[in-house]
Every structure is written in structure tokens, then in C-alpha cells.
Amino acid sequence: MDDKLKRLQQAYNDIEILDELTLATRRGIEKGKLHQQKTRATERHVKWIASSVAAMFIFFTISINTLPAFAGSLEQVPVLGKLVSVLHFSKGNAGGGVIQDGTDVNFITVKQQEGSDQIILNFAQNNEPQQIANSFHMKFTEYPNTMTISVGGARRFSAAKDLETLKQSNYIQDAYQIITMDDSAIRFNITFNEPVKYEVKEYKDPAQVVIKLTSDKENTVKLSPVYSLRTMSMPYGEEIGMAEEMLFELEGLRVLKDQQGSFLVEAGYYNTEAEALAQLKRIQSESGVDSLLIEKRSNLQIPEFISTEKK
Image 1 (cartoon, helix red, strand yellow):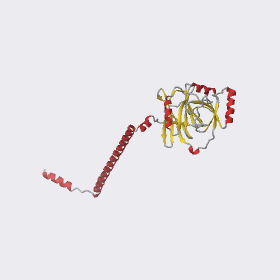
Image 2: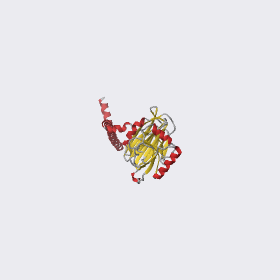
Image 3: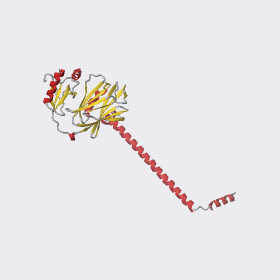
Image 4: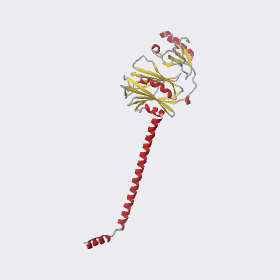
């Protein structure tokens, strides 16, 4: 038995291994080593990415929890939906949306960016995000630079509390609600503290209107004063609404807030005092309204407070 085992061992030792086979074996071993090195490198790269992502997540979490300003800016940052249209203004007027009812303009936020600010209006129905914006209208006027925003079919204006926060914008001096006698519409004014360029976009899913503001100081020319045809100053309430209704058919009609926080109805403004006086006489003869007066005002000037006594 031992002799048989010795003969088998000798036969195995006598087997001739060809050079080509030896070369192929070495190449196979080398390829195996290279593959193993690549696998280890890939594993290290994956581990590095995973650790980096974890570090970023930790930093983001710490930032939210430790920096109040950063956390506050993320509280109501809405995710923009699908772009419906970019509004085209004609003589300062533009509009969009569709006619519907029961809407709540539930919040307005300002998003500050380098070189521009965004004012974002959001719509809701029954405390749920609305998919399509209500019919809305925007009008830009000067003396002072003001954008008046009207939303039809709006039964609630929860965002009224947010108007004060719009003053955080670099371009906004004031923002305030306007009285309207229609219980299915809301209106508010945004007054700018400098000449601005504006771009308005409408989105859906969810419904939003975004106003982008940038400075227009480069193209500013010195504008001459105008002569505003206006009512005396009045507190916020039905008196303002009734005065506006009496002058409803006049071109250039708008409601403004004065320097002391009271309100007035303006029946247009004119380049000369003579033009304003002629229009005043025309209104008095045709409608019987005799409560209007003339105020001289520069471009960015807020209207003066004018009481009955001062008149």
C-alpha cells in the first residue's frame, strides 16, 4: 500500500507544467489582486461619502436648533408648485387665477435673496392647500410707488397678520389691508421705499403668487411733483368704503394710508394744479361730491394727514 502511494506521488511530481499555463496563472493572480484593491478603494469612498452626509445632517440639525434666525426662515418657506404664467403688465395692470369662492389667503411670506426679494402669497380651502389660485388683480401706481393686490372669492384673510413682516424686505416701507365693501374679496397695498422692478409669477399645485422685487435705482429719473385729488384723512372703516363707492367710476381711483396711519381715497393725480382743479370742478358738478381737496406730493412721499379742520 505504501509503495502504491509513493508511485502516485512520483507521478504527480513528474507532471510538466507548460510555460503558457504558468503565465496565465500569474496573470490571474495579478488580476485578482487588482480587483481586490479596487474593491477596497470603493468601500473606502462609500464610507467617506456616508460620513460626509452624516456630518452635513448633523450640522443642519444643529443650525436649526441653535440659530433662531435660521430656524425662523424655514418655518413657512413654501415649496413652489408648477409655473402657470408670468404676468404681463399693461399700464401697470395685470391679473391671473380663476374665479372660485370660499378661499383663505392664509399666509404671505417674504424670502430675501441676494439682489432681490420674493413676496409669496398662498391660498387655502378648508385649511388645505389650494391647487389653483383665485382670480387676482395687481395694479402698480406711483406717488407713492404702490402695488395694490386684489383677490376675488376670498372669504378669509388669515395672512393679514403677516403684512407687518413684509417690512423686513429691503424694498418695502409699508403693507396694509384696504377696506372693501365686498365680503367675497380682499385687498391690500404694498408701498415701496424706492423705485423697484417687479416680476409676478403664478403657480399651481399648490396655488401661489410670487412677486419678485429688485432695485430700479439705475433707471431713476427725477420726477416732478404731482397734484393729488383726494379726500380728507379718515380712520379705517366703512366711511372710507362709502367714499370710494361714491367715486367708483373715476379713473385712477385708489385708497392710501397717510403719514399718521389714517386712510384717504384718491381720485387721481395730475401734472399741474390747474388740471387737478379742473377735474375737481367737474366732479362737483356731475356727482355733487364736494369733499375733495388738492395735495401737492413728490414721488416717494406718503400722503399727508389732512383733517377737516386743516381743510
